[in-house]
Length: 186
Image 1 (cartoon, rainbow, N blue to C red):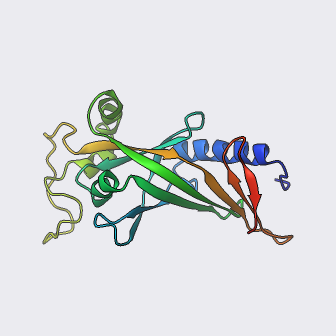
Image 2: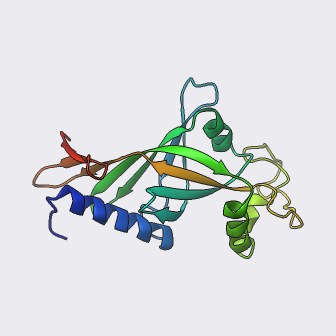
């Protein structure tokens, strides 16, 4: 791909790649790092998550979680976080400040659980123990009778995208925010 010079074009390509990432398991942006604020507000906590769905028009990512996970407790106390992703192919880094909300009941969660429960990924939400609980064995028992008890959807509303291109002819950076997009010093 030749170098792009139009911010609207760059933003369009970024959102197109993000939509592909949610559908392609090997896309480098499918598994970004999500950094949240610790529950007591004294630091940051980061982990890799999987982007399950992207809605470019709503500027939103959807992530699935066990509602007992630390990130859920953190987002309930501090709903702002950052998603960071890197594509070696494009030499592009994205930093996306987001506002997180939780959907643990209703159609948003139940319709997605209806698909997930038919896949091997359902096992991630069926443990009788919360994520991070110490156990004696690496694979604790799962409760297959549980119906979506711990499955939830984390909605990440993208506030802006900090786009960084690393390039031999010079690095470039921009804040992508629709009509308010602007070039930044790398």
